[in-house]
Image (cartoon, rainbow, N blue to C red):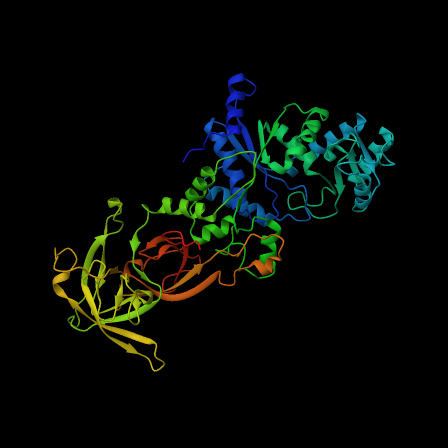
Length: 544
């Protein structure tokens, strides 16, 4: 799927046509403090796909200006996620690569009388800031001399002061209607080891200052970000101009994409992991890219989902069914369609000859001949899914097996249930059936119609398997309720059943369509002798 027309694409076309830019250069600037989730996929795909459409390129630049929360582990995970989605950055860079340049530009602002060292605490600054309806109040340090500010700022760099003791602020306008322009902080003091620069620095630039400078240094033409940065754009432009940057990038904002009943907050995802309410960031129920991958989602399905939602300057919320539909469309012609019995019920065919195992040949995917043929086995004992048998008198319209009714075992024979064997507690132990040897699939038999078609797995060759079935993590989107109260207690169910013998060589991340059951992917912990499958999505929407 190609990217649809949108306002940023139009801007790029016009900029190229007018000669404003000679090529397109974008960037994806994640902070390495968490795993990426499906919301980040919009920014990744938008940046890479737009640049690619015009023969341009995209940098991956880690916004590592806040070492308190950052970790090299997240750097590696983000690189892996982006490559899994199918993108290779032109360069992999770090905001910390530009710390020296940023420092020099801050000195320039001080020399121009456009920045000052402030002694106010964070709370005092907040009190001085004003509101949307009232102007702010100038810091008592705002009129320090240039020489004094240079001396103090250099002392900040040299580690003379404690965390929070001083900041460097831009000198703009404390009465500006845009609060972001009210003498914003440029640098703060943080004495901590940085994942990339170690202990070389104890002052760190703020995002609003560092980001436009980094875009300029890298030659970014179109700096794309989400809508909450809309009122930061004037500050972005101010820093580019006043710091006398050699290249002038431009910022453009687009709306966030939310998915109903899906957590799209790094803070909440971290809370789930640390509270052990999930099994980690790659828990298949998580909307993280590592979680979606483990569940069985494909890069192409995520790309097509993002592209199908379009791009605008309005935040939007879509149903999770759009993502599921994208996956089904991606997988339906790619995968082998095989038999798995998730809730096994043994069927003994009384009149089938002892010791005979037949091989039945059938297509791997009846909509894609290129996937070839395979053989499955059929014998005296088979497993069917317990949900395919009605214990009692079935309602009108029941099209599966029940006492006295006849169904076709797919690609095999008609069988009729003649007896139900029960355990001492009354539950069903096994079914006894008879079969009609004249009704083998492909024989041309037309004497009567079965009461439906159900799949099976031959018992002697069946491979035991574990199946993980999932529901949404959240039962609603009411963000005002505590997260714990919104969790779906039935979001993960594990059951044990069987798969057909052709799956004996399954390895991690192998994907199949289990006939009538859905799309499944072999879990990372799956191995020969202990197959584990995650249901990625059912065959059709099960939304209730």
